[in-house]
Length: 302
Image 1: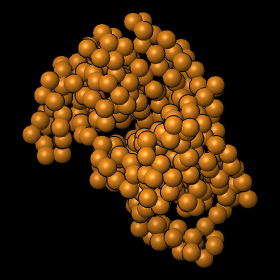
Image 2: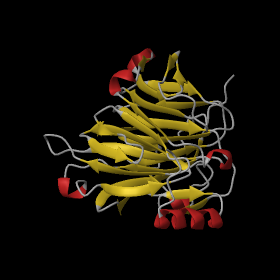
Image 3: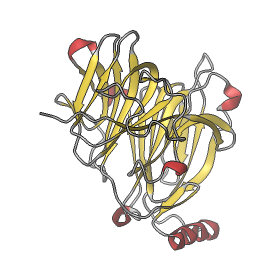
Image 4: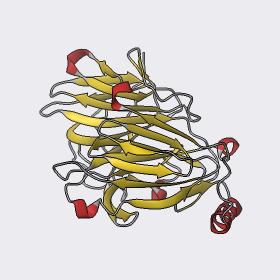
């Protein structure tokens, strides 16, 4: 019998400003390291105010991580030092492995209704792969399969496997899974996850019960790090759920549907030295990276 995971912690995404002035909500980031190892950051950049997303993210470096951009509305123009350029359109995913170093820009443009929406997830790389050759994968929406489950549950499988449906993002170092799950009112979603992997959910819209015991507070109910979580355990839009140990997760929706991202990955368990867009294992490695960026030797790939 599978042990269904209970909630370890939850918190609400918080407003922040990044890039050249992009207003977004950060589900987790620097303050939560290493609780979500191998994941470092999750940003929710949904907006209907162009002044808050058009400034974008002009040219900047990355090293030692992967950035995974998933667009729901609008489009993001991008370019990088490998010569790649194009648009990330609704339903598309850009899975970029910075590895030894890449310089790129991401410029949200919105759609005809002036809406922009999506998420960016940062995944760490282990020391053995931090200086790997960069690689860039643009996964078009048409390549992302959808699993149809009992009770009207639907899930886009970006990475990993669900009910025999396999996602197109493969050969990832941290063995991740990335699902976009929609559960109708009155529905239940249950999915086996790998023991020992970090598992998190982020609520895109609606609300649901993410703990089999309906205990949103679990063992840390009094923690000052928890914000605005209803005592009846309904986790709503903008809530980040970090699961404890177990073999499966179960999400129940009652009065209203719920849509959420479900992400898992194998923890790295190494020191994290992080400054801005670069994540290494030691401060000395960070110093070298920024020195190389300053003197023009940052890029190692052809």
